[in-house]
Amino acid sequence: GDSVTQMEGPVTLSEEAFLTINCTYTATGYPSLFWYVQYPGEGLQLLLKATKADDKGSNKGFEATYRKETTSFHLEKGSVQVSDSAVYFCALRSGGSARQLTFGSGTQLTVLP
Amino acid sequence: NAGVTQTPKFRVLKTGQSMTLLCAQDMNHEYMYWYRQDPGMGLRLIHYSVGEGTTAKGEVPDGYNVSRLKKQNFLLGLESAAPSQTSVYFCASSYWTDSSGANVLTFGAGSRLTVL
Image (cartoon, rainbow over all chains, first blue to last red):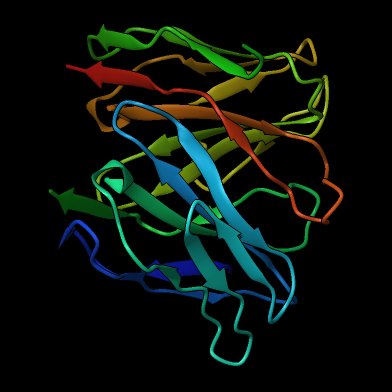
């Protein structure tokens, strides 16, 4: 079945540091890939998405490129801020009538001032 | 604000008690989902619905029932709560697809359930 593997957390960075959160996936066919973010006490929000190979999703300074050859969708940001502290989830949606998402386990990010 | 609303936000139950979580969306979405979130395990799909009057099992359906009598509402029921059902429950909804071909989910704020 489909699965998503994220780098283990928690991750602690200083403000303005470079961020990478690794995500690899296993799926049949050509899945769509997503990053969702969960701020403390809130539900998940879509951060960015990519629907086909070599697509780059971007939002709020975050980027991720859909790499089919390495089955990866790593999240990057050049300069993190304290307000980026949250839990980040990588997810995929492959074919099927349910169109549900399969999530990774989440990576807790803390950015210190 | 438009979106997904979950009630209640917090609930404490004793083992064997029953309860229902309500999810309401005002975006006319066809698809609705119930997930549970546990530490280190991400979100796991409990049940889902692809339209009014339909329901289907997800990855972890045991011990839960659902109903979708109206398009905007999706109810999650626990008939006899167990400590293993202590979790944070998230409802989500979506259109079948968007213009990019993706299926973006809108999530509620979550319901924290503790079973003693």
